Image 1 (tube, rainbow, N blue to C red):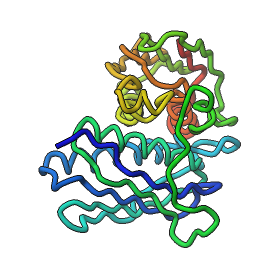
Image 2: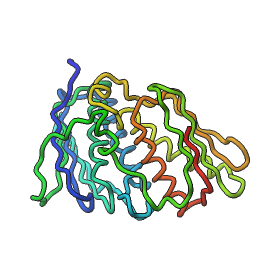
Image 3: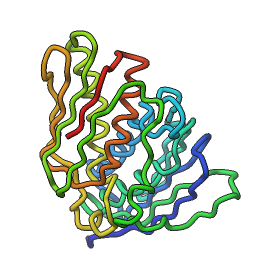
Image 4: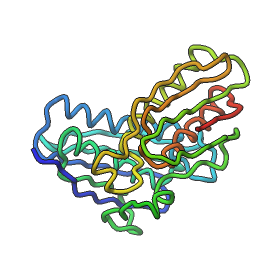
Length: 260
């Protein structure tokens, strides 16, 4: 099977609020394992969205939502997801398209990727604008202005660098809290591998990957995540911060996050 850059057509609304449909066609019938890998990958993107990761910029992350309404195997090669979103940034659809292109190149070739907004006539179904070093910061979801905690952020100047992410709480953390943070970061890790390239060339070559992610208790009040190789856009952190913004309001208050 050849390396496959699938044909990608996306209907990009002004705001992702309501029903939308993802349809993917494999290049040829996949094995059961590859089929499951695709379903799991979309599930991680959906799980990240359900945690508030893709909220619109001027809203509280916990007010955003995503959910699966129906999944269908239409035939040997075509898969369809009926999905719903509330108060989500439509640029999250680019992230979804990117991880599916990465799947096509790394796991099993896809023929087409199609994302539709049923009943919408405001935007046409078309290829996305290619991401490059001049526009990459504008083409991915933003950080919410309503996170609820300060962020100390030291951007990296070098590709494939080691990165560190620390979440601080106002009271001692329990194993339950550490596991809950790790579960959020697990969704983010799956999506971040190919979801946030700085250029289309980086996506196609695999240079955008974010790998070797480990999360553990750092001290009595902090959970640390280390990233062995960070090859993507700095915008990849936005969705993780938004997820934690939801966590802050629904599970355990956060006093500070540090990225370095």
